Amino acid sequence: MNDTFLSAVLLLFLVADPFGNIPIFIAALRDVPRERRRRIILRECLIAFGVLTAFVFAGRPFLEMLGLSETSLQIGGAVVLMLVALRMVFPSPEGVYGTPPGGEPFIVPLAVPALAGPSALATVMLLVSKNPARWAEWVAAIAVVMAVSALILASAERLQRLLGERVTGAFERLVGLVLAAIAVELFLRGVRAFVATLA
Image 1 (tube, rainbow, N blue to C red):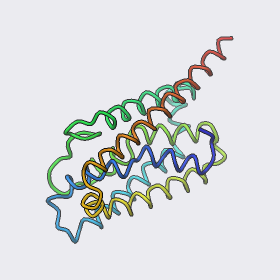
Image 2 (tube, rainbow, N blue to C red; image 1 turned 60 degrees about the horizontal axis):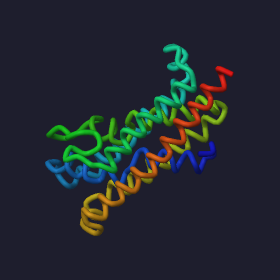
Image 3 (cartoon, one colour; image 1 turned 135 degrees about the horizontal axis):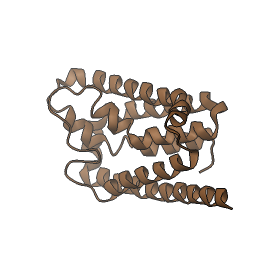
Image 4 (cartoon, rainbow, N blue to C red; image 1 turned 60 degrees about the vertical axis):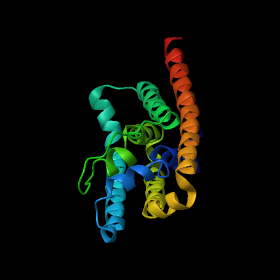
């Protein structure tokens, strides 16, 4: 995908997958009083925004500290994206990120890894490593995605009742298919960049 603000928003939205996370949020908040659910969703989206934004600024030093190249990040991010995509296309009873623990959730599993999972973190680091001077655009893209995700997840129960489990499941599989295609493209770009360094 081209490194534009719109493509960054779209990619991060697909990776965060708020529609696919509707069942996870409903299950995690089932035992939480209804009047607290929206507050928790907003809090978890803000935490996810904070985690992803931290990687905008700490991503490059983190890569340098570990001695990782942009090519390895691109290939690694593609592999993680593909694994997430496969679990979306072929869902398990535990969901994409596993079964959420009981009680009122805090950070895990809603903020991390449901919204700010490994694929989202890898995507942010990839965007910043390729265009570090445009960090403000990437932070804005994260903010847009988290704001839209908060709106969608705040209406999670209503959406699931309106659309039904079959439609939400089909949408998640469609998102998984798109993510798989993006993962293949990222992988091929990484391989081409690696081959170019050998020439």
